[in-house]
Length: 161
Length: 336
Ligand SMILES: C[S@@+](CC[C@H](N)C(=O)[O-])C[C@H]1O[C@@H](n2cnc3c(N)ncnc32)[C@H](O)[C@@H]1O
Image (cartoon, rainbow over all chains, first blue to last red; front, side, top):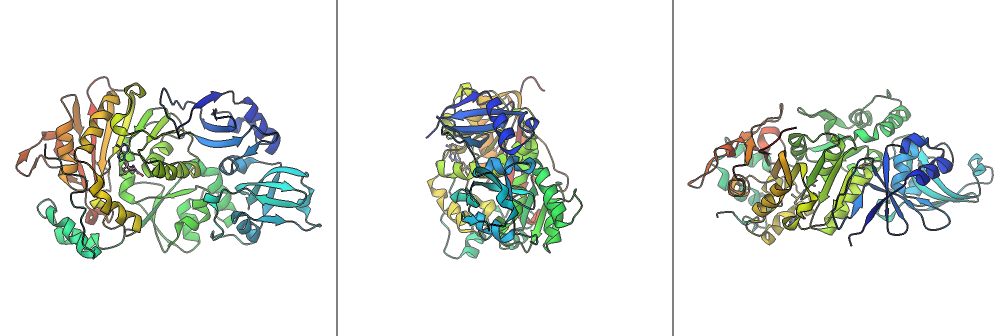
């Protein structure tokens, strides 16, 4: 159950968040990065120190899934850093946000201005500028990547629109 | 040793009202107003939330979208939607909220802008006083409300090792810390009685031991009732063993906070009296706005360490909270 978390050079991951979502690099400057297994990258405080503890079951918060050709941000990191994102962001209205939190696939009409997003890739879904998680955008549809454990279609969304 | 099995009063009657009264009978001599204690214990707990300062940018966005001033607090956000909100008397950034039946469904909760936590269980982290950049051990940490308070209080710097024996409960802890954006927590699933020596030394420690949970009598959720019934599984002396182990991992001059959500001296003063030696001092403390009673240095015909009187016992009827007992213990040696 317990795993090893190894400290890794954070530059490739800071760069990825910058490239993918135009998040200013200094947002992730004061962080350390840790790798668990082959594909799980975690982000933690700069000075966090697990010392010689073993087993360890978490260092900071999960941040990225690497290891495939496309890296995937975690929902929690999308919420964490997504306020500052200015690229690959989809703004959702109230009804869409509810469906997003129900882990649905949302199709956008052909004349929807949001369809100008690139063809395929991970995006941050926002509600009135608030990052709600990440989704997979492909040719005009948004597939919610909200983890099952955080699914919340009955969320009370207080804002109009 | 006269340590009570954690779970000594685990056998409750079917009627919860009667359970409560029964469980409290043994404190008639310890408390100023037993009838008030019983009466309060039969009322449900107020709902309390605290704002997560790590999510200031998110709170600001929500405030602006709501049409409030950008500096609006989570309390003000909830008030703007018609909930009745009252700031805690003793701590900023936390409120009692009336009318919010399902706090887990709010956008504030989903985004980690706030955490729901019983009022008096915010006290141990305040008494611990961990500072940014320190190394802290929370030996019995799940589901992590107090870990979150400590970690957030350290402004996401330093290290909080959050340990618990139960993997299921650790999942809840991780989920809470992730939702709140806490990055200075390291999670470990180790039996606290065998926590390794070379993990230390720690600057501060919270030891929020498993106990018979009498202070939770007001919590009527099924999980809380189950927890009270599960007391029977506890083993006598576990609390003292955990304290003995933790003490070895604390640096000289370091601070350990021992807390239980129970009133029983057998799970508080007697444990400290048994497990602490001459290199320990139970320090006096008080929290302005949160009333407590002193600990006892005599119980059931036995004389205890004099500094046991420095324990703080929080009775439900004094502050309209759950019940709690807290000791702040300093280890001899270099301060600072
Ligand atoms: C009172 S609860 C802790 C509550 C927690 N501090 C919070 O604020 O959310 C006690 C915890 O001790 C854990 N526990 C019991 N025996 C233990 C042991 N030997 N080592 C470590 N943890 C233990 C239980 O699983 C339980 O989660």
